Image 1 (cartoon, rainbow, N blue to C red):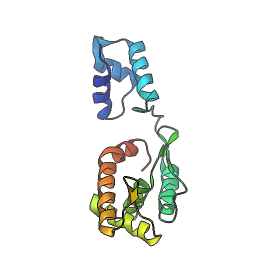
Image 2 (cartoon, helix red, strand yellow; image 1 turned 90 degrees about the vertical axis):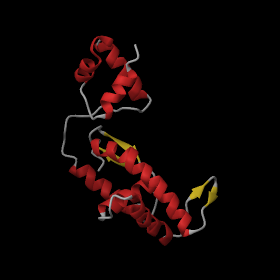
Image 3 (cartoon, rainbow, N blue to C red; image 1 turned 60 degrees about the vertical axis):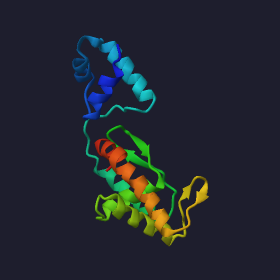
Image 4 (cartoon, rainbow, N blue to C red; image 1 turned 45 degrees about the vertical axis):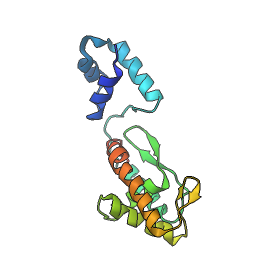
Length: 165
């Protein structure tokens, strides 16, 4: 039976234990089948096991520093994810958006795009689209707004669960 769709739907609601997932699937599969499906989903990067709750404050402080440094350089491209005991790869635009949130910019793609563009423009950096630099400030800001909008909708909720922010 197809267990992946019900597993994905259940996990989209938030973290679940293996036993909870087995209960959701009911008679569709046994515990070994649930573990096998979760192993495959973990291998392809669709899910990650969470550790018991811990104080994520230290990791969040580190991540704030790394995101603030993104204003000056693109050196550090990973952020701590304490709930998984690992990290997430965060591109420059994502780190600049998080820096904006840390600095009190509204959780709005347009406002965060202006914040990110300020940092990029200050160091003379432009975005690349289709292999070519984007020249105008307006086009850079529009591209940033698109990328940040996707980040806010797709990654940020998951990163909150993982303790990144």
